[in-house]
Amino acid sequence: MLFVPRRFLPQGKEISVRPRLTVWPASAALLVAASLPAWPAFQDTAYSARSMAMGGAFTAVYGDPVSVFFNPAGLAAIPRLSMRLDGVREIPSASSPAPEDNLNGIVSMRLPARLGVATFSGLSGQEGAAGSEQMEAVSWGGEPARHVPGGQLYLGASAKMLGLNETGGAPDSERFGVDAGAIYRFRRRFSFGASLLNANQPAWDMPGFDERAPRTARAGFAVELPDFVFAADYAHSNAAAGNPSRDQESMGVERWWNNERGHSLFVVRSGVAAGGAQPLWSWGLGVKKFGVEISYAMSIALNSDAGPGQALSLRFRFIESPSGATLNDTPN
Image (tube, rainbow, N blue to C red):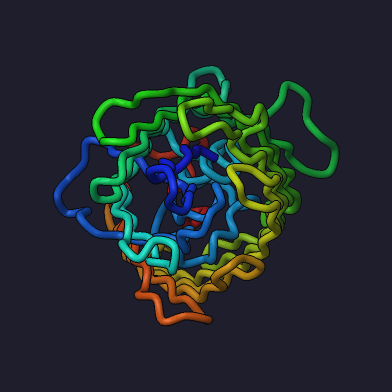
């Protein structure tokens, strides 16, 4: 997963560290969007409308570019060229009453000679005058050289630069981070996934900020059919940046309606996330036509009157998969 720490407020004020999404050259059509709550943790942002609507249960989901933020092994089934833009507006909280507007962009392409999928991603966010954060990453997902009996094993990794600026603009301080993950699929519909994010715990030693990004371990299970997906996740984050360690559970479903040729056209999603400071229920809708998918999601805090988070995603997919199968075999 790709994360950057939230800036620390001036001395004497409460510190707030939260995930940031990046600015990617994008279209004005994605001005608003949303995310999971903004409490301190580095895996709480919903990087797309689909992941938000499914409660953030994405560790074992296979074939979606947004897997780069949850488990890079999930990139392995992406077709030859896929591009997406996502906008997220985080739910306001008691520690941060102003919502954060963020954008991210992802480009994925299949490498020749069955070498897997390469992904380039960027995120950026701004919280008024509080500062900005940026991230750039290169990720890979694919099969190992040896086949695993009984199913297929996919591996993935990300190398990322995390940047922080207290006043906006170019980052004042950048740190290198590493993510790694694996997914085991069997019977073409069941998946188990595990990932380790911020494995090297990047450290910042700027004035007033001497901390490490929390190392986050994720595990998940998913059932994926041509018109239905169920996913469940568990995540544990180490104590960091003045925040205690934390466990979070999430679960989500999606249901596609297809045309007479079996191509996905319309989707409804829903999910829940618990175990954090702000339990959430989320829902979403999406439509897909000619390789273009537009999705919307909303997340609602269950124990506060905070306004809803919202997310809007736009995805482009080109060219059939190398096997010649349609791109709708796995709903994304």
